Length: 606
Image (tube, rainbow, N blue to C red; front, top):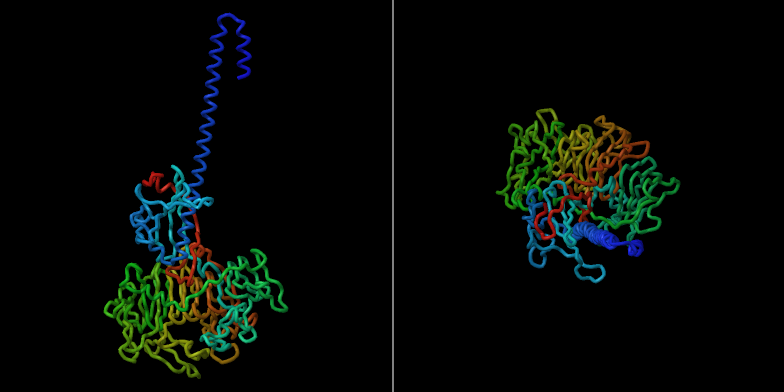
């Protein structure tokens, strides 16, 4: 402007050309000033839009966090949502709108629907940011994963993200243990206190604390290598072990773990040692899973699994099928009444007919893909249970309860094809480990699973009593196949012996591999006769969770050495209907930004 004024003064001395020139130059200047003001105003508007753009994304994330808090307070909240929401109705999800005091404004849809407003951190009143979310729970029953689409709004800007949420559970860890001691039910240690609990069933840091001199301890050994995250509710004892993932303890003490005398320090690839987190508690039994075989509660169990009764032998086949021998089974799906129980063909036909569960060749059926197989104990004679026997007689002539095995008087059972044993436990000459009366091996009427084979599909197998791993249990494809094993009592690696001492091993088993997520709710994962003879290497690809530490060998002299590797897929998903902690939170396994589901008016997005 100063230059233009100087030029105009100079031109005043000129003849009539000067005035038009000044006008022309002034017009140019006005255009430049106007253009500059336009650019400035656009910059202000762009800045405001960018703030709204970022704020809308932050509001969408806030919606996810708020939904997580609702799940933490109500583990069944995944059943709520707006059934008319596009993200919900398009996936086959089953949800209901909460009503009354439980009404949730974030479930609004359409232009007349509600939004949940985010309070200002400064004033506490509603800010200009709000959100909505929609639920897809179609994968929850099968793999425990919820999908949430959250839309944030600030001004006239909306943004949406989709988050996958999974319960924080036992299989987030390669190794999870509640108590760092051997199971007192098997060791006979400890006494029963006034609350009816064994005094070894206490934490080392508790009040009262466990007595290690009375209960004994199990330590992480010099050759132990863990290829994944490890967690214990108790204080750990670690002797020169190697941890390739994070280690978590619920011990508040300093130090957070003990290094026994004569042991070198452990190796931690993540951090300098265990970090603290509060305990995650195990349910007392897995009987809640039995409900998943009911056929009369479609709202809760839209896809029931299959129920089997008594000792059940399962051989997984690489073609996606399995062979099942289960002589006591009468009904494979149950209901609130005996009359409502059924036996659909996909579970196998009870009885001794062709391809029957009580036939010497067993029933060959498809793996219960994305579902559960539950084995219960034989109900009492004449009880109001669809699988209760009418008399104390055996289910058929091929099956018998035995009282002798080798030279010892031990209970067991045999399923015979003439003189040939289709299945028999204990095997000939086997000496069965002793235990408490409630923990007797090979119970003739027990809810036990005897398992081996190649898994082709995704399924969970649960037992009211024991799970015996009688051979390798492997995946046909480690990327696609998935297996969950849940025992109320121990999950045993079968290891029969023929003498009460020495290394008289039976069955010629050396190395053993188990591909699965393994959970023993009330006891442990353990090798039978772990202190008898050298077997080779126990390879586990998956996750292990147990109430007490279980022994798999004696270093260099007996049992198995460990090769445990974490199945990292369990960070994002779980075997079908796998058991979760008593109380849990939901973690986000992945986020994805997607086109806005709604525009600022509430109408569906483009």
